[in-house]
Image (cartoon, rainbow over all chains, first blue to last red; front, side, top):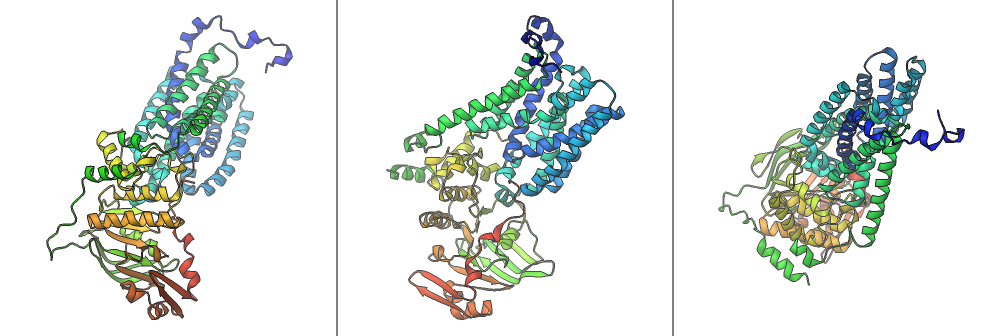
Length: 298
Length: 297
């Protein structure tokens, strides 16, 4: 690997002189980033509502194991990523009714998955950029076939999620009353885990297993810092994730560093700004009661 | 200061007429006959015959693990009866029955939960429907009306995690009233509230009962906050139960017989105190209602 200390100049990393020529070449990558941004922004909201960031991380490690295993034996990497993800999601969905059980289960599954993945990659004789990409992302390598898979799966996941959205939110925030009102609370949890498994598998191939949280958690967490509205949280989260993913791709095109640091940096900055805004707003009385006149006028 | 708004709210609201059924044809809010519930070998209660009329206030008392919460689960259609039958408003039990409003005990929300007061109430209206549930003016008006009824307009847009326990429980009352229920099931709704809010929540539940003839089934381990309202008491202990007015049930002899141990009931003004070997069982119920499907954290 190159490093700044070894005498490599700044221009070797950042070079925007051919930017105009490069952009058409990464058209697929930009579309992929946008699609993943929307997916991550929307799915991330439920991840935050259900307190699942750690589960996302666990699922992504198993997805990584699946993908690297597939790479080793020459099967489809996409299929491997999905297999790993869905196995993890099904396990967690079956085990994890309570957060405590779930978190320790993840703590057990995660290192095993990561270890398996590292083993498979160590045994793999092919191109090393394939190896590294599974951990840190390789959005530049998106071809038309994988783009189609990405779009179709994303549309499917978002459609199902839209269909179960309201009862899922109810069951996530207020499980006892939701059950009393007839919401199938015990089915919705595992159902969402499977959707989450799909979302993670898609994201792993593009942003890498280590950084999935940048799209599936950070934007939604940022959104909840500035609003508590059930409408605006998903909207803002999607805008934030889209900005991080597409913005990260745009910057990455002009540089030689993998895409993920850009995505993580942009989403982290958005989070910091939201936190600051939320703090300022809280101090100015965002959470204060409205005056009665205002309440009556609303 | 609050008065003009409260008055406006009353005139703006469209009160459902009190159960205007002609005399002699009143459908009971709840009827159970020969009902029993057992988990495996463990029999919680059996042979329960119970009729609750519209507008009646029934307090359900008893020590830990006697199946008070299970009774609510049965009525909510979440647990089947082992034997016997049960009807709410003349219809057999089912899940998600809009004739039933459910007020849980206060459980608290984290400060950063993205849910405002109005959103919690709104979940009671259509939270169980499939789909995304985009904003609708009619639903918003309904939420505003419910918020006014529990005097929560002032904090309608505050995230629930920033509200006090009492404020949250007022929202629970509004949430439970969203479907215009014929029967309100209350699962220790006053637990961990201060006296002021206990009174306020009881007042709101009672207002619903008086104005709409909604029957109330109130599970509690502390009868005093609701004693003036209680029409009848259902006292359950170890599979045995006693049903009657507070004066009939809350006596030294009846409770001693139920507990199978000497218990003394002291009545002073509007308060009842139960003293005896059962004291512990009577007053330590806080852990009784950890619902197994709590999935949040």
